[in-house]
Structures are given as structure tokens and as C-alpha cells.
Image (tube, rainbow, N blue to C red):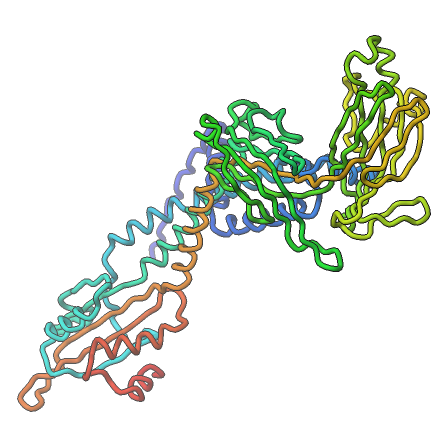
Length: 556
């Protein structure tokens, strides 16, 4: 016995270190890209995006109300700054929300493009040939017909309108005269799935475009004909511009608020807010034409790519100050509703003496009048303490402190709209003159002869103007998303095969043909069994086997 010797293969030379490192980096990038563009990753990122939006719904956001954010942080001196560091008060503009948003976008694009190519090839690929043994399929039936195999399949093919059908001569078993037919339907399911995901990408792009090229601004207007125009960020009380805007080139529009009506239930709960306005847009600004409109909660004014929302309301007291020489100043200013149930409001007002009354600037500054206090739309007094018992303007009254001195009007320093500068009071530059309760028409005269009169109170509204040039595309993308989702859920991908071959026997002078039908649902089989039975009845007609026989074959 002769021993054989198998030569040992020569060892392959190892690649250079630089080439090996490049290969490892390439493999890492390839594997990372495959993981990122998988549907599982896209679903995880979509869930993370929904999860990341929860703090934006539960916590106050700077883009909506900076004052609420400051109050929230001040009430939590330890936790508040930490939350602010993680941008929990600016969720939708934070780095981590943007990162999830961008990763989801990349994942969807990387997942959709190969599927689109694959679906395109699937549409051009003929259905697969009939399996060798149709009886192994989940749905199968067999019958005998008194016609040639080709004629039997011709009749079946005519009934398969709307199916993708391919005829083939011969079969896997090699029977003489055998003819097979392959049919497939339900390509629309994958198309609907792709439409859903492409529309989701379009929705993300449209929302991002709205944030980049849009803006939002809030403005408080007294409902007595006060108006403003969206020509500059300075026209708004608060303004947030998109990342690509510098505050110029705003879409011009003018709004005038005429009336405001609030409907309340007997328990003080708000039922409906309605504001009658007039607006100018586009060519109206050239012709000075005002158009009537009505704002309600969740019923904004929609003009072009702009929307005007009715966000809130409150009351603006009107005071008149009459100086000793008879000259007057009248101001109407909104006060902040501190109690959302009864609309007990707080605020402040500052009055500068009429021009020329005090030529010396220091003297004029020392004779400014300031008011700070509470306003109740439906007043109730507990001794001298004022409160409100109902939010409607039925019995208004104010409880105010009146000051004289330097109110800080011409210092150039920012001041609160709803309170006086306590530092000026502590320094004695603003001295309290009186504390009074007043109803409309009542007044009080100070020691130097200056009269302060409470005239009335008027409703004010808080309007938000939103400019989003991509809002129509958001709607279109959402509609296509719903349509694609419904199609992908309702349409089933299924295949049907038919095989006809001679039986080899003669009955009543006619040759018999065996016809087999098999069906397979490529996705969900729910409901496919009943549909297959109906399909068999339609394809075979009177030659279809009876229900018990078909069920017996199916069980086998």
C-alpha cells in the first residue's frame, strides 16, 4: 500500500497594514450603512422620534412662550438648568432631535431606493413556473374537463383579467401535451408600501422646508379696530424666524381686529371664542381693500401660505390721566390674565406728561405717572380686596397703586409690560401716591391735583401669524401616506398556477383532461382561502369540484 502525500498549500502573503486597515474601514462603513438602511432601524428611529417629541408636548417651549420657560426654570433652581442644558425647552430645534430626524431621513431614503429598484424588476419579471407538485400548496384543487388542455387553459386565462399571466408548454413532470399557466396579482401592495414610505420622506422634507423658510409671530391687538402689518419682525410682540431668514422679505399682510366675543357656560367654562377681523393680502395692499373674516378657535384665516390663529384673549383697561393744567393722556394696555378661570388680571401702565408741560427733562421725568394693580371682569370685594368671580366682562373694576416719579420710560432699558420696576420704587425714584378701587367712570385726585380715571375695559386678542410655504406639500404628502397605507393593508400579493394535461382515458368518445389549480398568498393568508374558492368557481365554472370535495382535497 503506497502512501500519498498531499502538498501543503503555500501560505498567502498578508496584505500590507495600510491596505488591511482600509479593508476593515470599508467593511465597517458597509455594515453600518446596511444596518442604518434596514427597515428595522427605520422603525426604531421613527419610534425614537415620537419618543423625543414627548418633552416638547409636556414642557414649555421657548419658541411658544419664553416667559413660561423662565418661570419653570426659576421654580426648579437645580433641575431646571440641567434640563435647559439638554435643550428640553427647545426640543424641536435641539441637536439630538435633529440628529434623530436626519438619521430617520437617511435610513428611509437608503431603504426605499433599493426597494424601488427591486419592485421595478419584479414588475418586469414574469411569474415563476408552476411547481412540480401543486398538491403541496396551501390551496389546491383538481378536476376533469372534456376539452383539450390548451382549450382549458384558454378558458382559464380569459377569466384572469387583471392578473399577470404567462403560458408555458410542457411541465416539470414532462407529460405529453401538458400546458401550464402562471398568474400573479397584488403588485399594488408593494407599490402602496413604497408610496407610503416615499410620502413619509416627502412629509419630513416639507416639514423641514417649513422650518427653514417659514416664520411665526405673535401680536396682541385690542379689539377696537387696532391693526398691524407683517412687514417687519418689529411689528410683532414675539417673532421666530426660520433658519434661512434674516427678518427681511416677510410676506406682507395687514390685519385689523374689530370685535371679540367670548361665550361662557354658567360655571365659567369657555364655550367658544369669536373675533371679527378685516385683512389685506396681495393686491389688496395696493388697492387698500379690506376683506371681512371671522376667527374662531381651530378655525384660522388661511390666505396663501399664511395662517392667522386666534390663540388667546384677555382684557385691556383704559385709563385717563389729567394733569393740573388740564392736559390729558389716555392709554389702553393689555393686562395679563393670572387666573385662567376668572380672568383676574394684573398689569401696569406708564404715562409721560404732555410735551412742553415740563421743558426740563429731569422735571418731566419726576412727574411721570405709573399705575400697577389688578383688574376683575366680574368684580367681587372682600372688604377692600378685589377678586373676580366670572370671566365675562359684566361688572369690571380695578384695584390699583398709583405712583409718581421716574417710571423708566426713557431709560432705554427693557421693562416688563405687566409690572413696574421694583428697583425704581426701592430707590425712591417712583413714589406711591395712593391705593384705590375704581369702577368704570370713577376717578381719584392726587395731592398735586393730578386726576386718574378708570374709563373702561376692552377685549384684546392674541393672534399668531404663521408663514409656511410648504404647508400644501405637507397636506399632499399626508394624503398620499394614508392612501399608500390603505392600499398596502387591503391588497394581497397572491399567485395562482394552472396545469392541464391529458388523462389518457376516453369517456363517451371524448378525451378527458386533468386540470389542477394551486394558489399561494405571498404575504398574509387571511381571507385568501375563501378568495381562492371563489376564484376556482369562476375559472372552472360547472367543472369546479363541489365544496366538500374541494375541502377534502384541501385538508389532504
